[in-house]
Image 1 (cartoon, rainbow, N blue to C red):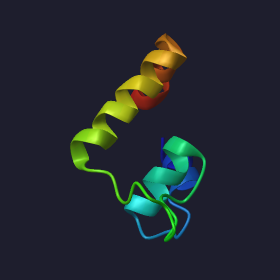
Image 2 (cartoon, rainbow, N blue to C red; image 1 turned 45 degrees about the vertical axis):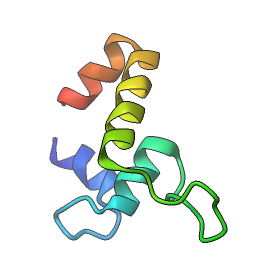
Image 3 (cartoon, one colour; image 1 turned 60 degrees about the vertical axis):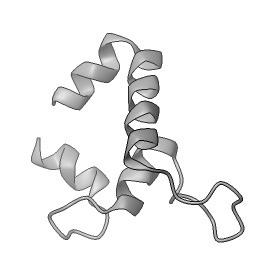
Image 4 (cartoon, rainbow, N blue to C red; image 1 turned 30 degrees about the vertical axis):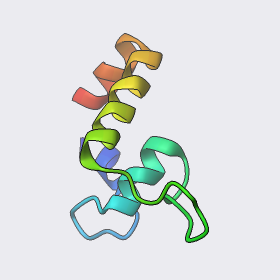
Length: 66
């Protein structure tokens, strides 16, 4: 479990920042300064996470559990 967490905790701070979470979830560091959508609300992030987990099926949920 520690190795998996370390994979996403790229700055080795012991916590996942928004930037690290966004990079893990979307494959990038989050909205760019010229992005028209701006930062997402917690509700939008939760919905995106839910959608991503559903798209990955049981493996997505099992991976999150680990």
